[in-house]
Length: 242
Image 1 (tube, rainbow, N blue to C red):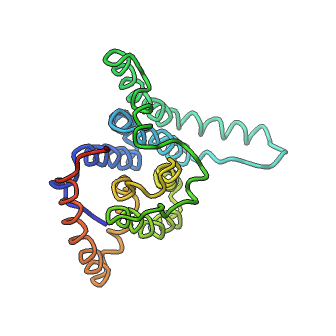
Image 2: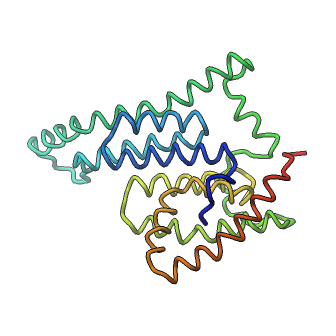
Image 3: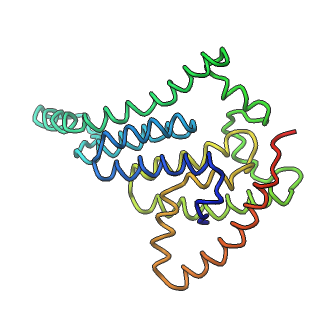
């Protein structure tokens, strides 16, 4: 559900803008801007590294590179795919630049804290650890009001993620599915999914398309406005983990 910029938590909004820039520029073949935006997004949040795959897939698809599963490959086909791969090199270079942002941040943490993985070790305080089986545990043992919002956000975005997949945009699908599933595999179920769903930019683009219909636009506004107000109140009174 859409939120307005002034009341979105600053770090989330920064990550949102940088990821949006990376997704937009890759579709316009502006590889330098895409690589720069991706590197900044990766420095702002580790999920920004997902733009590596997004930009790489977009570059390969735009160049016409196709995977062939046949065992018999002709020399002409190999040469043709090689030429297409060469045409994709600028985009692949932009994709390779994305992790530089995360590496730069790790370098800063090494200098300031003596631990390049401090941002990962800090997750232990939140009880987070990568576990693919935790995606099966969507509902926590004790459901609070904020937990109910996280669960609701997860359930509402499932059809949106499916809708993005049905759009047959490979790069957007890779980003959306990965960014949606990674928090669910962190060992905390749907915890903070209200915040993490803000990064699912292709879902908001899909909502915008649906919003061209008057009835859909009114439903989106009716759901978003009270939710936005409530989340803003929660954010203003948030004190962090105990």
